[in-house]
Image 1: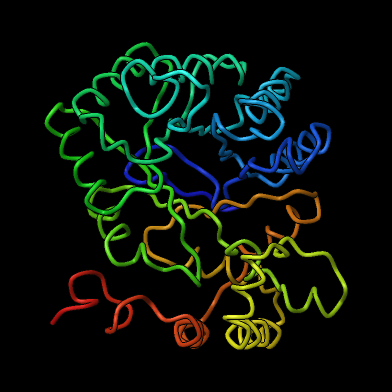
Image 2 (image 1 turned 120 degrees about the horizontal axis):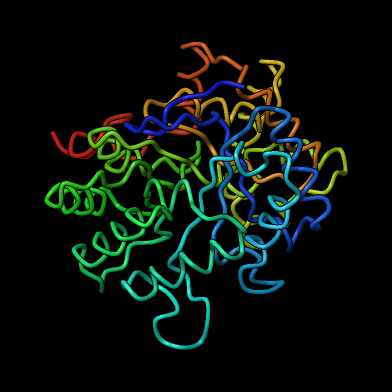
Length: 330
């Protein structure tokens, strides 16, 4: 496994991040434990979860699975850089979601209980809260850090200007601020290249792409259909997306075949080649999916292959791979 720093922080993390959203609803607790152990075997030390994950089974269920795994001992907690999130509604009453100082305090303590740990390595805002001022958010976060409950803070699903707002408010308080941003980013959805990636690089934040396979469409979906293998991309929306982009996906899977690589590995490797990307999130439901993802770290894409991928999946804006405002203005 390769490691890198998380943004400008001194924290060393693996180039792949284990996503746990499937733990509970899609993967049993027993299978989830096996996946987490195997992740450690592979050198993956960076785990991502959220207080809302596992909602279909019960509120906070995925965090509970991870907590019970930590409780097994064997330095599982000590070997893990643990990231979780808050924002989503965890109950029916007011102040059980979003980013008020009250919910930040309650949500952090609840996650710590479920995860059976006394601190979080990375605490991420799952979404921007337009109703809570940054002074309130950073004050509440600073208390958590002073108490030793949280070491680093990150954002998720922020626009570029939200990143700037957060960082300038932190700077005014002489606070470290955000060290990472978790965004939707993959070959088929490159919108973050306009403003989010440039903002993250400017502020020294690591970028953590979620849905790197775009819900499975970049994971060899056409090949799996031909082979009669079950595919995650079987929902109505996924089927519509596939039909809308069938020619594009066919050309992509042929390119991967010509490289002698799995399409999923190419998609992950492409992200690992992007400036500012720390670690794509992989969300395996099986050991086989986890083992397969490791190939992406070793897959090196040359300039010609990267150019072909840019042709197949153009960057947003009429002027190609440029940040805003050059992406759409002179």
